[in-house]
Image (tube, rainbow, N blue to C red; front, side, top):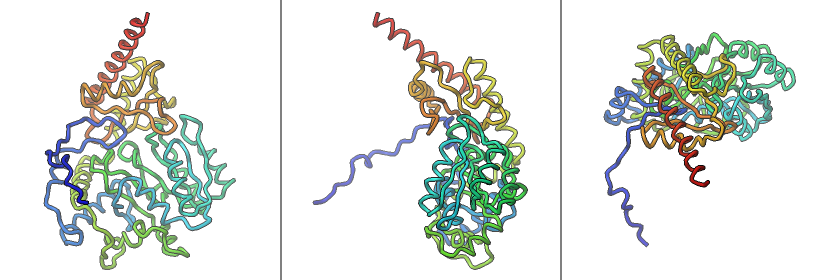
Length: 395
């Protein structure tokens, strides 16, 4: 039997233009898109290694760290979560996970697969974890590793007390892993000052780069622990000692570990270059100002934010309660069909309960905020009107 060539591949590629106002990815700038059209280089070519070095310096800036073990994992944000846990966990280690949405549960699933003794500390629905709740969990479980998402994109909750958690982890000789995939660029994050041992973020959110490369950094303390493991990390692909040699982190000759996508590397390099040129504080301020404008607009529309406390709202992924009697899917479909604008529904614990509006990177502007508010209002009113007409037709 011979399998024929698929007919679908005879058609030219068509990619529509959409405004991505969901929880990520965000739209790439023209600068990033143009960078990705450059010729492909070999993954060990000196020009490629030079770009990797430049990317590494950019990552140190956005994390505010001087860690040598700063690099990218080739993979989406989940790869950062995997690499963090894979390298730190040995069989039987107690791993405590802070739960403010879906991502703590996702990390718990991964940790179990690496042989951890998993424990959870869960926040009340729609709330961040208090310092008292975390401290009590530390005293109860005595964890070796503590994981928390600074911003949970499923609930729109921000965990503001990372600095205090860092101090707590040192008191309990515990390693702190922080997920900043959804939060970086939208709120302050200071890796070294806050005593964070491992942090990773997403390239496709506030950075405005393509998905597929995950910036990550390990503290000297974490690196020493990894070097002293009794066994090698369980996944070769995520072994940070090997990946770090490829990225030139340890002052040793570079080795071949895997074939990095040079195309993605170009895009991330330019996204970082733009981020650095604008400045970290300015980027954070812009994202926060846009979120405040959105929240005021939501209130003026008679809608309600899901996270009740303003200081616990994630600026980059804003969660709005779906009004009673409104089908969120129809609202999202209306926005996409009429305006090619993405408005997302909930994820995990917020499914069917919220709209999620992302204000990240290129989409964190006053103009985009006003546009999405107008479209959201129009879509909801249209769906309500259609529902009334349907009911009347039944009478």
